[in-house]
Image (cartoon, rainbow, N blue to C red):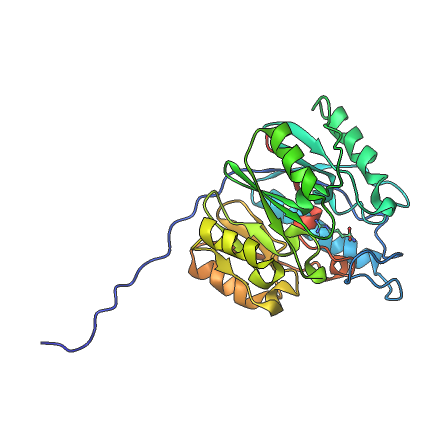
Amino acid sequence: MSLTAVTPTTAPAARTATRREYLMCPPTHFDVVYAINPWMDPAVPVDRDLARRQWTELRDTYLRLGHTVHLAEPVPGLVDMVFAANCALVVDSQVYGARFREPVREPEAPAYRAWFAAAGFGEVFLPGYANEGEGDFAVVADLILAGSGFRTDPAAHGEAQEFLGRPVVSLRLTDPRFYHLDTALFVLDDDNVAYYPPAFSTGSRRTLARLFPDAILATEADALVLGLNSVSDGENVVVARAATDLVAQLAARGYRPVPVDLSELAKAGGGAKCCTQEIRR
Ligand SMILES: NC(=[NH2+])NCCC[C@H](N)C(=O)O
């Protein structure tokens, strides 16, 4: 009789990618000239050419993965417009528009509304409360997770639920470094998410643990390189290259990490997800 324990080798679950439709905006006018989050320091110069190359690599990555990428026209002076995720939340072709908390970003809202109108989406819902689109809203199958604490007014969560007809789960962010939900959590697929628990209030952590007992939990180091600002199609996960532990965890769970470097955009506090608005028809 052998005394060697037989460890069953459980192969990671097979993952399935689905084609996505994204809206992006080239970083033509990208800059850091004001500070509305702890990542931003106007004294640190921005290399716009490098930002452009990194952003182009992100767009090309989506195209290579078979996704569709639409482009919004960058507006001079709107230095944060590259962060398309903030412009809306789109579910079932219904567009819940953004209302930026920061006056410096508010002109982005009509600029993006114009894109949706031109793309044939009809009326964009004009929200009554501050909300920064997918910066603070994440869609997990039929459920919408919504962040508040820094930018989005919790009243917008209820308003979005009423408009979209999908249950919205409110979560509270507590660490200013993770000022938008999408800096602390991303959706892996219809069943699971990855997140950094210390970015959330105690009650929100308990809520997340209850909803997603199997979630991938990120380290602080990975959260601080915006590893949670990732974009998954259910199989391929476009993730910050520097988030090494997260990359390993994704691979161990059967996802395919697709590392990208958006270090120049991180100077404004944004990564891959911030540059990517998902259009759900
Ligand atoms: N979805 C995001 N987290 N976008 C990043 C936005 C960055 C921008 N500088 C701001 O502070 O508003």
